[in-house]
Image (cartoon, rainbow, N blue to C red; front, side, top):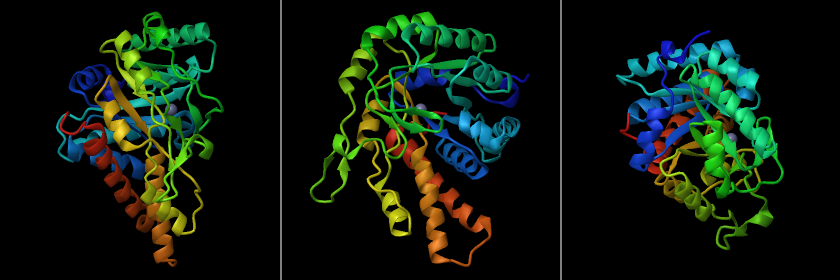
Length: 332
Ligand SMILES: [Zn+2]
């Protein structure tokens, strides 16, 4: 058993309180490998932004839980080496689907866990979320729970139908579970294909899909019910068209990939939304950069020569999100 404090990590409590009060959001970037982690830490250290390193169940299986714990510890040391004196880095489990998984992460040095029981009936969601919160709080680990269902596919999380969070349930849910933050469904979606073409309109000039807008009315109603309570948005990649175009022009095939426009995420950041999850965008940046190297230099076979540019591209993306979308730069 190792506590996150021994790894130099922090939980989300204080950073969320500041973000809600300050009208910005903390980036939660998913990672599976060293290059992603390097890019995240470099971007956060250079912009002095608090950051959440997010690990899904799939990523944990992919990377190995023991290795991850040392990677997170290494990330803190690396951040200091980059001149970030007091790094504010959270290690967070994304979409924990059982008490056992959440407990295991708490015991392995995670400073924050998500229990996603949103697909269960309401009372079962409350019971499981509360069980996780009660356990995690003994070790001062913060807990995110979810109410409402997002569409899309993310690792093992998949839902065909979405439904918005019901504002009339949020007070009861948050007080009975004791969760520290609440993931809600207001029209974001997992993956790089967030909306089906029939849900969108098409820009007549570019032929590109224009997604339906986020349900800001639902978000504001939730805010009114829970003043100052930290709200989380999942599935909030923007799916930058320049990366999609690059991938498609270099032999890839991502037809009609579409995300959440950044202006809407910027607007959400100013509200009680204090954590925004971004995963697909960094996958796209990485894939675009690697495809470019393979296209331009077909003889290249040194992984550093394609993973290096991929890392640089991801870092650029993370910095852009921090500075231009979430507004968390200079807050750590
Ligand atoms: Zn998610």
